[in-house]
Image 1: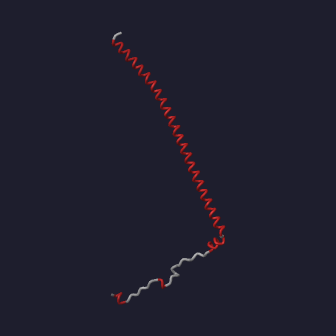
Image 2: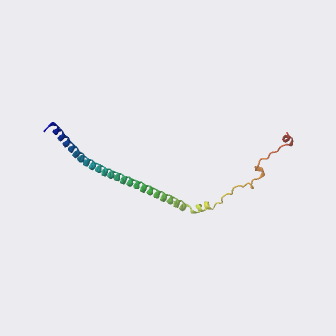
Image 3: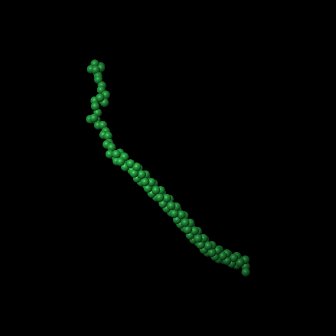
Length: 122
């Protein structure tokens, strides 16, 4: 076999080897990308589930705190009414003072000015 035949044979075998390697590595790459995608989805789902769980805990805690605050306020209100219910009624029945209107104002309240005719004429 001549050198040219060996060279062409080596080029052909190299090309076939390169193609086989590309197919093999691309299959590995595709599988790697699939695995990476599945892991990312799983991690994001775990993160989302954890975030949802913590959010629910916070909402539940806030609801419980609000419920307790309303119950405490109601209990204090009930306790105040039980102390002296007549006092609470008296406070509610007190008349509200009326506001003074312009008609109620007397002339004494308004300042008066006097001008001499000589001063006005100047």
